[in-house]
Image (cartoon, rainbow over all chains, first blue to last red; front, top):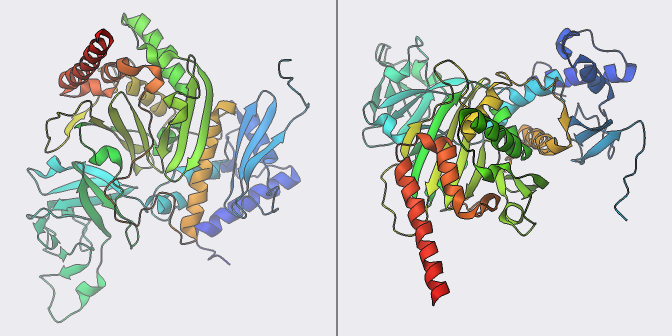
Length: 107
Length: 420
């Protein structure tokens, strides 16, 4: 168990709160966790907070609790979450989309 | 897009933070040798901590926390000895490790001094700069990257930039900014101000690639008019983890250095080695100069390459708010770099050496770097010197002459060959 007073433990607590928010669909009350509601991109930041992968697709470890990272980027309407798992080292993308689109090569 | 806590973790460099602990596993240049020609000590700030860097009469360098452990006076105004430094206020003396070894006003038979130890680090010189390591023992070897130790005429541009070092590093895995910021925008600035911007930077990117490698991330690009056989793709150049980028072309080799002073300030250096031809004069030290990035009215100076970069970095704010960013497909390198930082924070937390730690003694570390940059060949050196921070170098004319003379010789040889 990490020392509860350590920065590592603090990070784990924060990550756990974020993961709980994603499960419940309810944003955390701490206003520090998100940009102010009046900020320009607040809706996207909220969706990022709620939708980012919480568990590794390979080993199912918690991304937050194992020191991993998910960085979101967009391709058109498609949301790509470049994900690294600190548990097993899996590195790849989790992709959310509303429509499956296939681009045909020139033929 | 990141969360607030992720952004904080990636940008905070102070002691005890995950990024701060990672960054304390590397050597940093923090001063020039000539800084100690008139005075033996200098205040420096590194990784959100204040330090005194000093040079003994015989030429050994030491680094110690700036504030004396006794009554907090600055050690920079202390007395430098061969075996350490003594506070000017009450004479407490510290050895190179930071251990207090003398307390003149305290009774000799007490062991008070043994209980007092300040933070201390290691310091040594390479390439005309003073490098320091302030992390845990055993200190790794100082990496002797090629640019710092190879033959050539050297000059170093420097300035302090008021922003977090990470937003500068992310720029190094963002190839597309070159065709826009240094191409399209540069052209706009040129048209507005009546000069012709360099064409080499205006070519469109067809393809970019990123490979993780033993020193960081190797960046590749195919520009319009070139192929995968061109140097920009076949060789590429690396982001050297965690605070350099190696670039080059047309016989200029450069290391771009981003020293994290604290969370909101970065010491930004361009260390260049010019080595066309074989008959070069020998320098005792590199030529050092400060380059400008704001004009008298407070506007960013954007009529040269690095000035444009600084506008882009600083105008993001002291620390980029990555909860508000919108990354696209072309930002994949940025996401990859963040993953690399997280991965190595974890290694350090597990007691392992992070990426790029050198434990073996060595003469030189050669880094991959393209020679024919942007397919510009012989026009590239002059474009870079005139259109980059080297325009502020006091030896700019000498450098232009050096390169022009070399290429004139090549042309003459080609003509002679064609006529033979």
